[in-house]
Structure formats: C-alpha cells, structure tokens
Amino acid sequence: MMRTWIFPALFALCGLLVATGTALSGSPGEAAALLLMFVLLAGMNSPLVFPSSVSAQEAQRRSAVDGRPVVYWRPGCTYCLRLRSRLGRRARQLHWVNIWKDPDGAAAVRAANGGNETVPTVVVAGESHTNPDPSWVREQLPSSP
Image 1 (cartoon, helix red, strand yellow):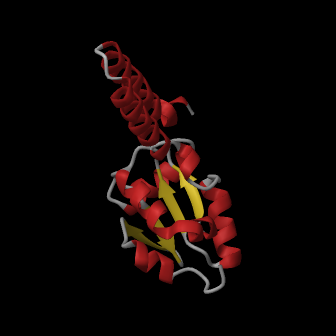
Image 2 (cartoon, helix red, strand yellow):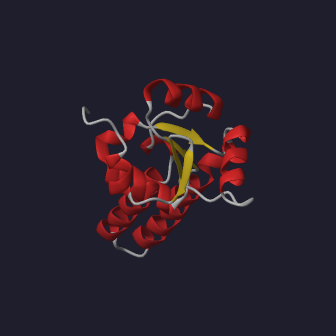
C-alpha cells in the first residue's frame, strides 16, 4: 500500500522544496506555478486517477461473466497512465488490478511476460496483450458506455 504513494509523495515534496526556494528568492508567482505543476504530477501518478482496483481473482471472475478486459497496472507507470487517460470515461468499464497490491496479479503479469512485470498487461478472452494501443482496448469494450 505504501509503495503506491512513493512517486506522488516525492513529486509533492520536490514541488514544495522547489516552490519554497523560488518564493524565498523573490518570485512568489513562479513559486505558485511550480507548486501547481508538481501537485498535478503527483495527482497524475497517484492511484486516485485509476478506477478502483480489484483482486486478480475477482477481476477474472467478473471478466468471465461480462466479457470485459482485465488491465494489470501499477502506480507510476507512464504507459498505464497513457492507457487510462486515452480511454477516458470508458476506463471504468475495465477491470483494473494493481499488481503492487495483489501478488496474484503480479504473478499473472509475470506469467504473461516471460517473468517480467511489464504493465499495462491487458487480458481479453484469456489472451494477454502487453502495452496495447488504447484505441484497440477501446474496441474490445461493449458498445454501450
């Protein structure tokens, strides 16, 4: 759980330090802009921008029922963030598994990627796809949002 917040916390801390130094040097407007930029980076890398994660077992069960893809991801992954942002609201239709919270999810990713924890790994109809194009993932979703 703590590991998922390391990158966001580091971004926020660095932003605070940079903004403080900039403000002390006499540029409060620039300090505010820098702090805002770092806070946005922290937010983008936090687990909060992703839909709620479920366990790998629960995601597989749900996928078997509704046929929707399962996405294995981890916080701080730029490719996961790219996939999440390009899917927009439709991302909530997928079943998301945070591999840092779920050892079974991490094991599934390693099994699909030759022992590597390469994410995002998307499983559609039992077939794994590593870092697929977001438009392809969107095509795998049911047509109704």
